[in-house]
Image (cartoon, rainbow, N blue to C red; front, side, top):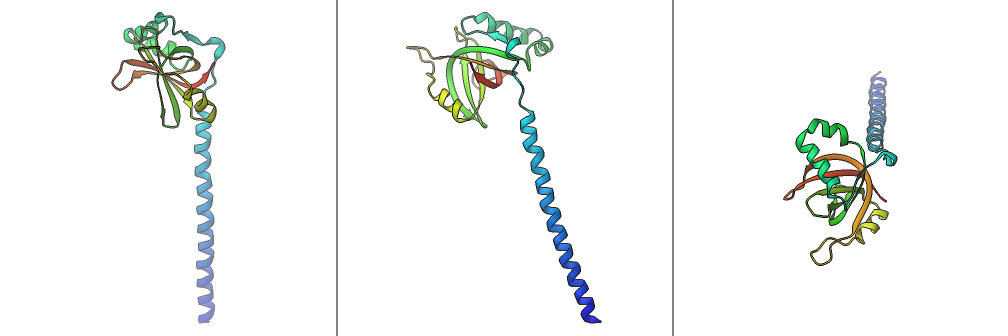
Amino acid sequence: MKNLKIIKIVASIGLSAILLMGCGSKSVSTTQAPSQTSKEEKQIKLDKDNAITISFDKNDDYKTIYDSFKQNLTQAKEKYLNKTLKISGEVSKVEKKNGYIVVYIMSKNHSYDAGLYFKDNEENETKTTRLKKWDNASGGDIVNAYGIFEEFGKIPSSNDYLKVTNCEFI
């Protein structure tokens, strides 16, 4: 009788341990799937046919957007944010930041800045390492890209700038 009780207790403990281990592994796989999906969902398709053009050669293109944000923030957000930009500018700086390669560009008169966020992959790495950054003697390379206008903000120790994400070189 005592042996039967011990066997039942041991069997219960063993069965409980198996069930707990099975539940634990199941919950791990459940939490991994949503995070992978959410990264993919953040990709926004570029609307290249209806892109807003901001040209390096036309300081007015940059100025129009800057002035819009300074004069009426709400209207400017509706008109520009989350829209596709076709943007060009002279390279001032390139850096890696949070899984992206950021190419900072500026207008022809160097009054306006934009940060172009490209995926940090081999193709973009190759293209960005070849870029000549601006200097007084010879200037810098001109970059042309499509991207989503995500934010109008500040670059630390610099002017206002346009943050453009999901960028693709043209």
